Image 1 (cartoon, rainbow, N blue to C red):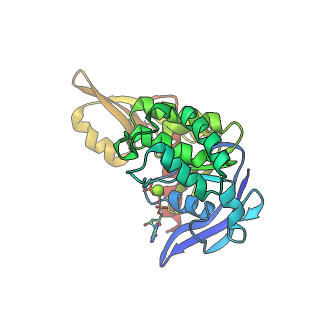
Image 2 (cartoon, rainbow, N blue to C red):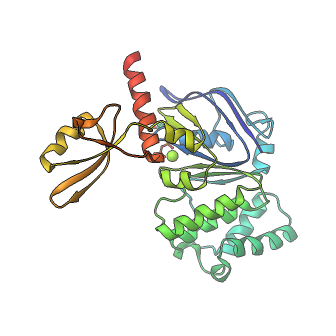
Image 3 (cartoon, rainbow, N blue to C red):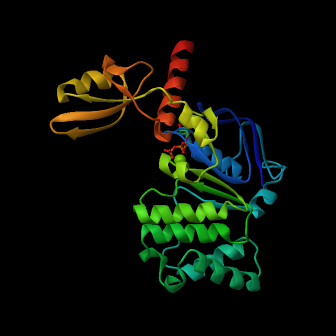
Length: 295
Ligand SMILES: Nc1ncnc2c1ncn2[C@@H]1O[C@H](COP(=O)(O)OP(=O)(O)OP(=O)(O)O)[C@@H](O)[C@H]1O
Ligand SMILES: [Mg+2]
């Protein structure tokens, strides 16, 4: 189920949270990256019909989200950034409740809930109070509720915060698996999650799309701009004030640093292969340079 976003603007009073956003999102897994306050949650809330837009147009499966919100809601599963659960219910009761809200019949609920609990590996905890679940279990329950009614579009807002690495990978793999037949829109701060699972990615910055393409194309923003060098600890501040340091570690009293920069830092850097995170940083710096020129 495709999402077509054309010249979308969203204002909260004087704050322009989304500024002329146009994106085309197709089947598979689509990643949304961007710093805090970039507008990721706002965009997702508009797509999921929870928030009205100011101007522009958003269509899900060919239907306008403002004119036909019921259609979108019927085909949508949403895992919000802050997931408020009814802590005193158990997983089965909770899914049964949400399934009822989605308009599923009793027989459909019975069939779907046991399959979903199996799929997210919560069958044996289905009768436990949700309030006592770990972060990972809550996330998996979040997926299960989103999948009720077999939606063709799944929107997931920053799902991996607070998950341990193994849970994160499990969660990611589950989403990738689901995206085979559906559209999954995923927002995250973790570039590695995008690298591992998304076929397309967009970067938002202050409400604007500064990049949209494949992870490979994003990575290429940093090609030829990644340098590795060894510095003395006292040089760190000078380097940091002039360049974007992406990583540093102490080695035998020296420091080994990686830097994203157009020119060779301190003229001592060795060119290094770019990673997706560095592509992201390079795209952000490019956007900032552009803003400065226009300021
Ligand atoms: N209900 C609201 N009322 C007023 N301003 C809002 C509201 N929701 C969001 N904003 C503003 O809109 C901008 C975008 O916020 P949004 O939550 O969409 O960003 P985000 O990319 O999801 O950030 P994060 O990575 O921190 O989750 C911010 O400036 C935020 O303060
Ligand atoms: Mg957010």
